[in-house]
Length: 145
Image (tube, rainbow, N blue to C red; front, side):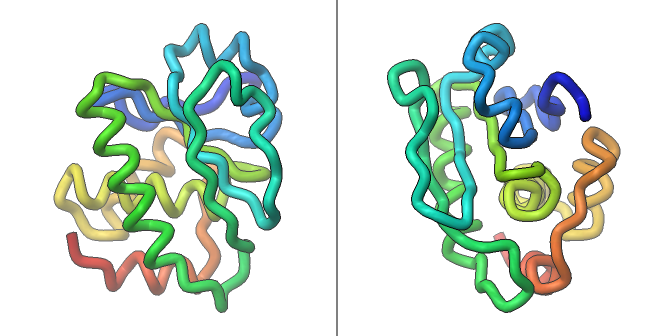
């Protein structure tokens, strides 16, 4: 496992994608310029470093039957607002493969005005382990921004 989260975008602002172990390392996140964390988990868990970072919590499971539409819309809005304010953003779930990756892919789709497949390719080039579940892929491929 990589010691650092993957830098997905530098513009319009820093956007990192990673896993739970990255989220536990506040010194690392501070060094990378992270100010805002989108924490995705299947249960209501408390942010580990609420005194150091602005957290936005997303609670949903990694199951094909989960409708992520509203989570995606909210995440894109949060990341856009943070980037307008010049804040670095870190998005994570347990492994940084499906749930958090889906939110990042949606943001790339909107900001780069590309299809799901193009956004998946871009994000996968930066973080090869990315792999949204089939239900998330279906939802993302139908989204219009």
